Length: 192
Ligand SMILES: C[C@@]1(CC(=O)O)C2=NC(=C\c3[nH]c(c(CCC(=O)O)c3CC(=O)O)Cc3[nH]c(c(CC(=O)O)c3CCC(=O)O)/C=C3\N/C(=C\2)[C@@H](CCC(=O)O)[C@]3(C)CC(=O)O)/[C@H]1CCC(=O)O
Ligand SMILES: NC(=O)c1ccc[n+]([C@@H]2O[C@H](COP(=O)([O-])OP(=O)(O)OC[C@H]3O[C@@H](n4cnc5c(N)ncnc54)[C@H](O)[C@@H]3O)[C@@H](O)[C@H]2O)c1
Image (tube, rainbow, N blue to C red; front, side):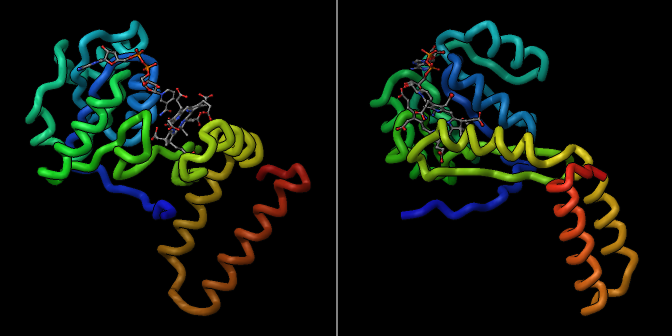
């Protein structure tokens, strides 16, 4: 079945990452764009992971995962090189209100990580439903190159217009026309 794309509110949601290698680092680095309420449990940390945890003042316990560790978390990312443990934590997460992402198999995932670009208020997420993470990354790079950084300023202007002009057909038409013209400007190499 296809994955439903949604933008998930992380306020007051505690996240646990199990594992401290390269993949845990990638997941943590991406999550930090959206929340700081992240704890880590891992037997060992890579140097990059250690640095990221220290810089962001995150909670870290150096030990093996034990049953029950997830009970107070809303989300768990299982980034260990141990597939049976990924399966066990996924099963355990069903006892709690905890969504699970396991890095080696979509069978043990309630959700998967998209590739994404974030430029101020614009976020674009890309998924291949797990078919080709490499392709998701390449599409992300393509979007990064195509969409100018000025999009942040443009969105600020649009937000202001939406909050000041009265709702209705005229406003809808004007905003749609402005968005169309702004995107047409990319093709002509005009970024403003
Ligand atoms: C997008 C991104 C986001 C992120 O990580 O935040 C992400 N993987 C990224 C990179 C990447 N991952 C892999 C390669 C090597 C090339 C290749 O295999 O294609 C590369 C490319 C590279 O690193 O260059 C290997 C890999 N990945 C998964 C498996 C297990 C499996 O397939 O069963 C294996 C095999 C492990 C092995 O063979 O040992 C699984 C998943 N990876 C996902 C996300 C989810 C599906 C996303 C989708 O819908 O496509 C899903 C299902 C679960 C999840 O992780 O949530 C991030 C790009 C970030 C960016 O740069 O923009
Ligand atoms: N989803 C993806 O994008 C993706 C991409 C490539 C690879 N992978 C998979 O991700 C997995 C992790 O890869 P990696 O390169 O980060 O591996 P790694 O060996 O660098 O890291 C594994 C981490 O798990 C920790 N760990 C192992 N058992 C533990 C336990 N019981 N409790 C707590 N911590 C424990 C280790 O201490 C280490 O920090 C691999 O199985 C790999 O196949 C996923």
